[in-house]
Image (cartoon, rainbow, N blue to C red; front, side, top):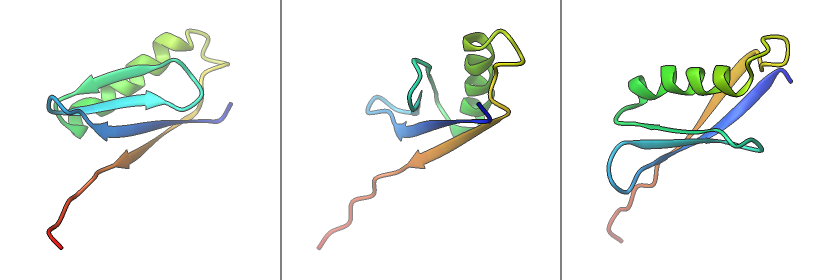
Length: 69
């Protein structure tokens, strides 16, 4: 595997939730800056064998914004 993709969404309780697509990897943080090293750490824990670990982590950040019509 060369890449793993995380879907990053606003947490209803504040901050951000990140979950890997197709894998059971989840983490959360108060900011995107705090989330990045936590995602990296979660991937390293999920793939202890460096040969099997994805080389790239892609964060797909989804942000809903509501405007008046």
